[in-house]
Image (cartoon, rainbow, N blue to C red; front, side, top):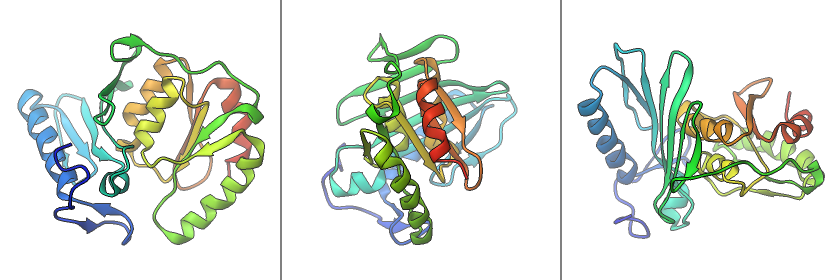
Length: 233
């Protein structure tokens, strides 16, 4: 937050020239990595900006130190920190923190999901044409063209589409009832690990999409069932 809205430092690119990274991403990752290494030295670590460390405990921390970097660098207040803990049964715990609104979303497997300590739940399932659906787009131009074709199918079938720039925060908002559904392809584990648990523990479902690249769709069961035929393939 100290750097948000100010000049970018250490600005670089990753998969394409539009896929940006800055010192804010790197420094946040270092802080989280060092904390986990100190507190949980036997656990594995995996994060967006290069952290990949093996462990011996059977547990792994998967985190994105700044999900929504482009929004962050533009001064657009929709970005977050996402941290998840995996074990042999999948995601065991997940946290998504939105510093701009000081909102902390948490979930533990089998224990429900909360926002600021209060229980949250996905919205009651609505007919598809009355749903507000979130999605995201990749950085490769050819892939974005394919995603645009999917959006062309989805948009006439739903109330509207939202694209805010942070998969983890979109999933957290879905869990809190601020969206009806979410879908996206081309995600990495750190993008969805914590958010997927939030949705499940808030009463929704998360399903993988058929075809490549990897993708998912999330929301109340009936909404996912209605939306999925527009997304697969």
